[in-house]
Image 1 (cartoon, rainbow, N blue to C red):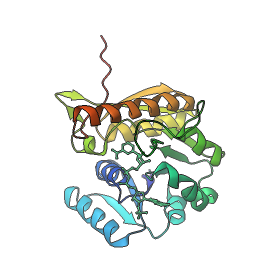
Image 2 (cartoon, helix red, strand yellow; image 1 turned 180 degrees about the vertical axis):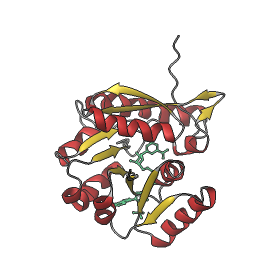
Image 3 (tube, rainbow, N blue to C red; image 1 turned 60 degrees about the vertical axis):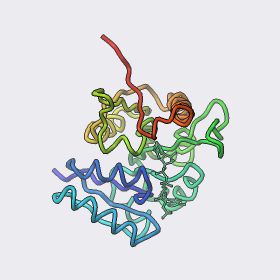
Length: 219
Ligand SMILES: NC(=O)c1ccc[n+]([C@@H]2O[C@H](COP(=O)([O-])OP(=O)(O)OC[C@H]3O[C@@H](n4cnc5c(N)ncnc54)[C@H](OP(=O)(O)O)[C@@H]3O)[C@@H](O)[C@H]2O)c1
């Protein structure tokens, strides 16, 4: 069976590189894109050093990376997503597109999205023929190196409208070492994005050093 191919747009960023490093351990082919080619090559080298079996290529443009991919992870700031969409639109039809964005304002104390929507739903509107799934927005980049904090495996929430797409993304979240929790349909992204805005505010206030996450305690 062919490996699932995953394009990561913004693979030199904090999140893009952390996700790439984690997924390289799984049965995936990774197609990395970022504008800075030297930095991207260095991300690839770091990953290959940590995981020599990694199946990983640097690709010269988001469209080529997404063309070959089954899953496209948009690891860019919310404000850059429209620009990315313009480049991948023609090759993203029927594919799983993962929205990890938190649409924070400049002072990190609110969201720039209107009430009644979310970054993930806005991405779905821009890509109506793709299957947008929210994931990885409630986990900090630093959590990926060790997704267990104080002995507790960090929860990672997923939201999406297409059951098969949600299952695929659940596999990615699990491979990355998090406890995957399916929160519901894509509109649950509103809550997930607001939750992370709160965690960011608490992180700043209480000096969590950007190493924090959610854990639902249950019986
Ligand atoms: N940092 C976290 O802990 C965290 C946690 C959860 C979710 N998130 C979300 O993850 C996303 C990325 O955050 P980050 O902290 O990883 O940001 P970052 O470190 O600034 O990285 C952003 C990446 O996006 C690329 N990029 C920027 N504009 C682009 C464009 N127009 N087209 C293509 N690529 C572009 C950048 O590469 P170039 O400079 O080469 O363009 C870089 O690789 C954001 O939406 C954020 O809300 C972050």
